[in-house]
Length: 195
Image (tube, rainbow, N blue to C red; front, side, top):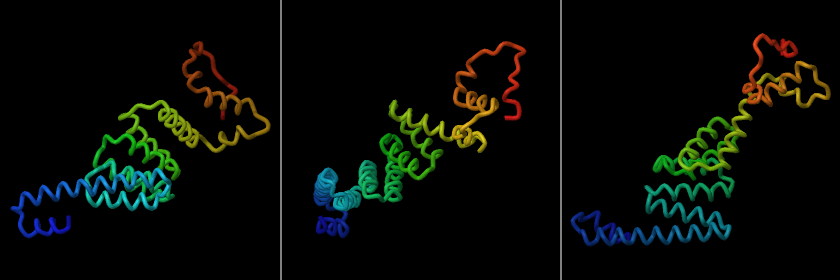
């Protein structure tokens, strides 16, 4: 392959050499990819990462290679590098739902729920998944809870509750039910005043 590439760099008119270079590059890519997947399946993640990097050198425009390398890097505990490779994957192929989901998982592990939700939304838009929807709902609930005053977050751990605190718990935890209920005109809730 190196010899053919050297010949092509000297004389671009060698079409037969160009075709051989293409075939050999494809074979190198296949061999690297096969080796990487076998190593990953066997739990030899360092070896798998090296083989994926070799495959990327041969085919730098293949988004799935970056995604698969990112998965291996996550298993190695290299979340920062994995995130970079997942982002490269979606840069090359914005429709890669699996890469968007991986980005969301890494961001969630990094305690960045807002960015994780954005990545999950991309993934869900491309490939609807009930488990992903549950995960997104849990993150949204966590973000909503974080926006509440500190006094509210301490109520659940309190051994006793005032009527106002109980009303606040009911209002927040059962918010959708409370919002859906039609209150009779003229009624005023006084227990939650100043809470």
